[in-house]
Image 1 (cartoon, rainbow, N blue to C red):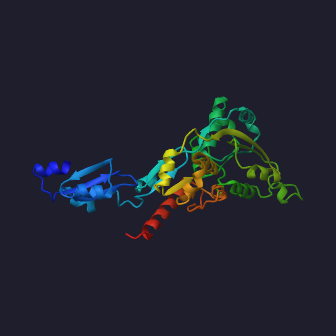
Image 2 (tube, rainbow, N blue to C red):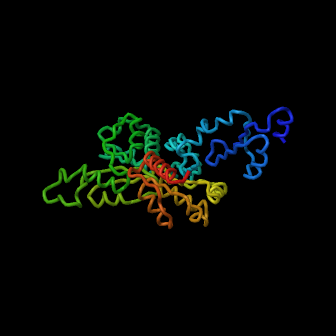
Image 3 (cartoon, rainbow, N blue to C red):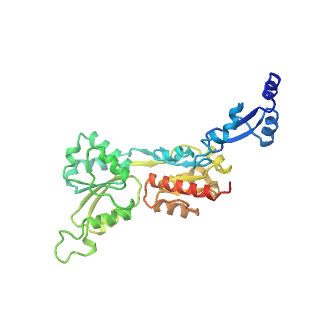
Length: 345
């Protein structure tokens, strides 16, 4: 109808036309023709709204001006299952579309008493170990709510698991004393053993069971977490108080839209930043979860999350050497670029 009216009002039938559906999205489709044939081409390719039509000689510049389609990650839709997409921006800048579907929410504990007791006796600790940005946020929020301040931490050494956690601590004007090379419980154990090599031990007590003797640590963390590190500290002679600073809960949501995208093959990569994000995803999406992820590249932040994925009978395609979102994003970029180079043009 539009093309016919344009021709009737003086435009030449061979005038170039482009129809763009879902512009700047992963499933963008661009169809070119002219006023005389574009209607039939649209019907043939089954191009449906929402779409825009461009008419005129500017269409002939498409090969020079198709900046978005030339981005290295164009055509990829990345599923993010955490609360916020901070750290995933480079993927968008390179042309990928971020599909946010958070499977986990962070909330305060039901009862502050454990953390309150630890804060009341904060001077008794040699170490405070913070394993996440959430741990930092909730610990300091409660410290200040108890009318304590940074000066009360004088003389206490601070360990941060991960550079992001360290950065969050630094914002309070506090220097981090220890960051393990590997950002998980096993790496944390190695870091403390290295930091306290049988120092100040009485003669005859240099065995492995005494390596952390005399140390008292505070570990404010999520309500449910692995016990590998606390158990090992106690085994090595140290004392550790593990207190709940926050809870990770499954949000009240449904996965119908996400399920539709997965069934239609519209998700290239599914990212999981913890075992909880993956396990909650499986619960939310229901009995079809495994089948929905079968043809999707699964990216995980580290080996603990990888184990949860593999336990469910799925394969991990992308995992960084360093357990950070930034490192995982770089691995996704490498994966997508490799796949693009291997795909016939």
